[in-house]
Every structure is written in C-alpha cells, then in structure tokens.
Image 1 (tube, rainbow, N blue to C red):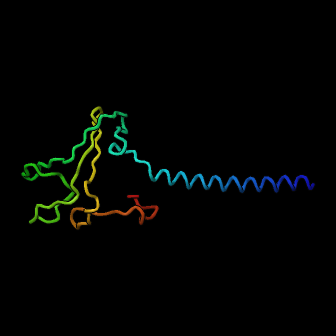
Image 2 (image 1 turned 135 degrees about the vertical axis):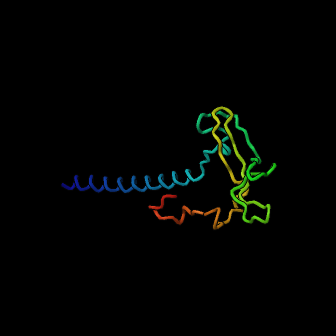
Image 3 (image 1 turned 90 degrees about the vertical axis):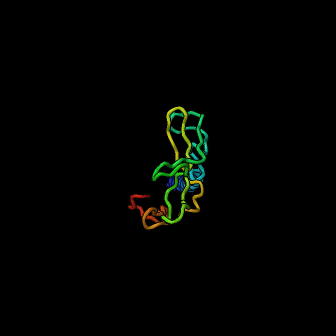
Length: 131
C-alpha cells in the first residue's frame, strides 16, 4: 500500500511540474505573438499570395472635392483649414493586388465628433464587437 502512495505522490509532483511548465510556455507564446508582424510593411511579403515584390505609395492622392494633388487622409478637422489628420500611405502586392493602408503619423489621431472615433481594445469588455 505504501508503494502506491509513493507512486501517487510522485505523479502529483510531476503533474504540478508539468502544469508550471505549460503555464510558462503559454506566457512565452503570448509574449512572442505580441511581437509578430505579419504585415506587408513589416515582412515585405504579401500575406495573401506570398509575393515579395511590394509597391509602396508614400502618399496616396485624394481627388475628391476638387482637390488637385492633396494626400488622402482620415479626416480634416476644420473646413477653414487645409490641415488634415491621419495622412495615408499604402503597400500593394504587385501580383495579387492586396493593399494595406497605414497612417503615416498615428500619434496625430485624435477623436473628432463627426469623423473619427477611437476604440480602445484594451479597455473594451469581452462582449465588445470591436475587440
């Protein structure tokens, strides 16, 4: 009987050790996933078709509202000023045409009643559809 008790105690110790190792691996995996950049900008590779020939438009032209060669942006805070926020650049795959849009200066983005809402996924609850 004592032999079984020792085996059970040994198995419990091994199980506890394995649980600690799995928890540690989960933490490491979460940290590693935070640093993975699967974008065309980061990898210089199309995530849709694998092509490594990427076109980078440093300024995307906006031809709306009679503008001549203005850069496209997320919004213009004031009708009275030509200043825009969220100027865009794009990366495009030369094989399949997939396009990624990027804001040149993301720190310039501020909420605007009419044009832009900032959704913070860190603060959103688990049922929030924007998470």
